[in-house]
Length: 270
Image: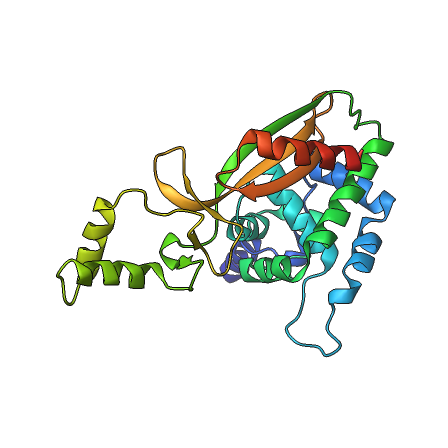
């Protein structure tokens, strides 16, 4: 009798995952109803069809799940694939939004990152424009008053990896030559760092570039540090808050250089 009661208590501590239920977050539930009604998954499947390999390799993530993960990152202010992956893995509501049962793990950050690199800019742009079309149908795009804002974003590229535009010489090799010319036969990293701090007018974008991110520019950030960076600018419908266009330029580009292209992109979208 006592053993039966003890077993009942133990069983009460464990709940099979099939019995777990979640009502879902009201916002994501409403968003999912809109996406389902408008045929979002069928649309992105067509857009991404050309990227599927003829021969099966690593299991892929469905386009609908991938773009929903990007939406989660936007709505929750997550700026990295690692942050998005951690958030969706930790939330029953977001699992429901992605259409994943508890027995299926959500995509990890490496899968999201690889998918983002695989899909080209035009595909992402087509999905962005599709979403704007849904907003316009709902009367959420007016386009009468547009605001332009910009921010500087650090590029995913190390400043120490820049090379000279003229001959491809690395920055470290360049400093080593300067150190040897100043009388240091075998300079250490500390010697190179000390020499670099004393140099004036260093890091010219006209002279240096990053081999894997040539659009990034050497930029002094708001905190005073110098990094390779981009300038991201976006146009927003001030009446409804809908983002109409997003453009990217080098980190040192002035507003007078980027305002025109951003407005042109917004007009093309409208």
